Image 1 (tube, rainbow, N blue to C red):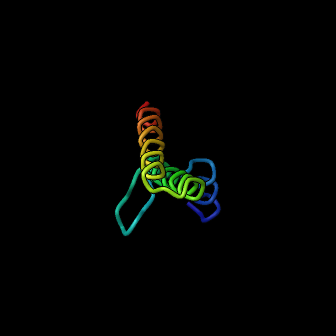
Image 2 (image 1 turned 90 degrees about the vertical axis):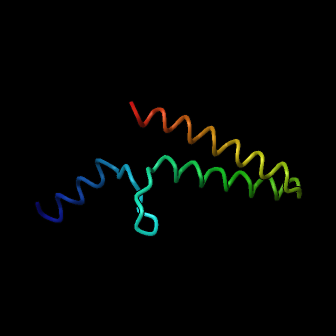
Length: 74
């Protein structure tokens, strides 16, 4: 397999896992955590309160994690 074939495969079939510190994580978990963090930061900036920011970020991360995890198993 040539380098071009590897690149073509990487573009057509995105990785199902992401390596973080040498540990493979399912991509949907990384996406869920990043979306939760983004929502927490946005809510914290808008409300200047920690409680709603943490709760909304955790809620979004949980919903995305469960939804994408269920669809990844199919």
